[in-house]
Length: 280
Image (cartoon, rainbow, N blue to C red; front, side, top):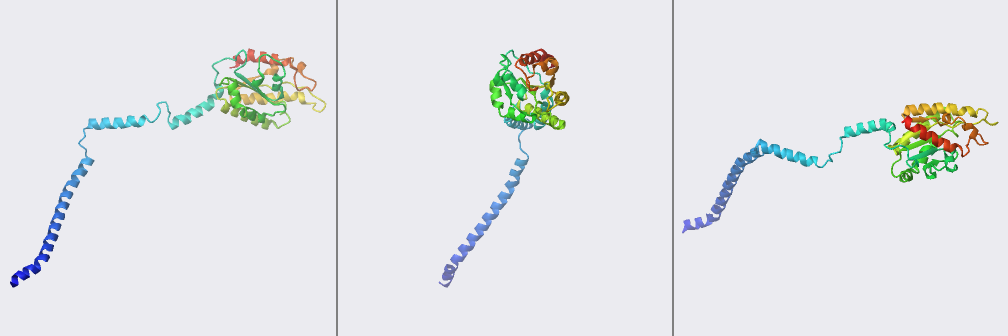
């Protein structure tokens, strides 16, 4: 009776001990199995059983997939930089695919009051809305004349401006010649940026007559034209000597000795038609 009571007393401790032991054994078995299979899985990951051919195909497929995200025509960054550099250096040597049209619809004129005279000359060739000039304008204002009207200009030229004729100087001879040269170069650079497809023509400053207030004014065009010609050479654009091609231009000056009668403008247009093609 005593031993039975003792066994009954120890029954719960024995069950607890057996449960703990079973848990420990199970844990050890789990660690043993896990530790055995883990290296195998790692080995498969590091050394796949995939054949070299299939690996190559997969790599090729991935490469093709990545390549499709880039347009076939997209150049590399280096190519873009080189292209921009080459384009900038060759902009002024681009020869438009078309000649000057009979109606001058692919041409614009930019300048001061001398160029503005096209609007008052009643000529039948150069349209008024293709003349972007301002009375009293200086060469440093040329870029603004173009920039303020760039979208309108393209629209009026059917999307493409083939020729840009520039003439400034009637109001600039009082400035330092180095400033005049600097401003003209800046105007050309601005024109190239706004109209990269265009051929830029620098026209000579027209002759002037001296006045009582400006006795040496007749000498100014010669000084200015040396600068204009030099700038044209430096910027690799075309120089067109309008005044030399119209020997009697001074006879067509108004009483102010600066502006011209309407009879000059048909002669001006004729000079452009007869000379530009040979200069390009």
